[in-house]
Length: 398
Image 1 (tube, rainbow, N blue to C red):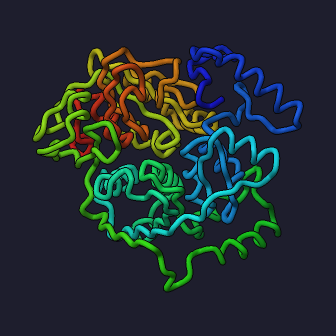
Image 2 (tube, rainbow, N blue to C red):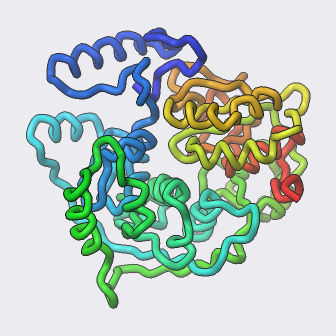
């Protein structure tokens, strides 16, 4: 339901997706008949599944967690084994409580160094994918490790693990630590009191052993990373914001995106800006974008909207006045859901638009017919919306 629900204020079961209303009402009836808890359209805890599961403490370290969505790996940020499955696998798992899969190979990606100002976890994962390819993690369960990862807060870790699937990994995960335990303490579905302490004692045994061997090791110095942005139709088609389109890119992506080899993306006019999704729709994402937008306004003619990842995120943002900053800057302030992260017969940007987006995928038509999507961090989206063209957020943060 998170994928098809309308995000405009005052929504109900109606949706622009063909068959969407029937999907919602039938899911509701089936959940009720089976006695399954459903975070329904009007539920105060409604939101994108990979956002509300951590919020509610449903995902816990050491859990095995599946969902029919490829970005389920987001929850590997908690030391869970989480991955996306298909509809048939979902049916099998619900009917039998089991699921067969081939054991993946193992990869460790170690990030060292300190992030420069204006660089985010979104830029970290885009750097990995740009350097090692969108198929670089195929067949692997990937552990993200290193002092740069330990320095991230839990929301940043979720952004990193979210895009493990864009690396073609079976899953991505991060060893649980005190930040993980502090995040989960007191969440509605997490253990409580003495049981929580007992759980932590168990969770502390989960991190990889010293000297553990992996099939592949990759090391990346994060201090050299700058804000990233995609130029083509895959996350691997990404460059530093001050860089240029490669000199010998594949023909189809440059033709579809309307860019040229050797071209700088900075200054390229945009038509729309989107902040949201299971990648970057959390409170910290909205805070960082709002910090750039405060006292500024989107450029004339730019359609801009922000969609919180959950209703809890929406309420927290409103309590801080972030909604006022967004609306005063010219952004639409929406209800939670997947929204314009993708197009499946529902709401879309005008055909042919060039969009800068905080989402995770940029293949042809992802956000609508002939839409050209540049993926980036929320800060880069906000800065570009203000400028009316792709812009470096660091220049506005000074």
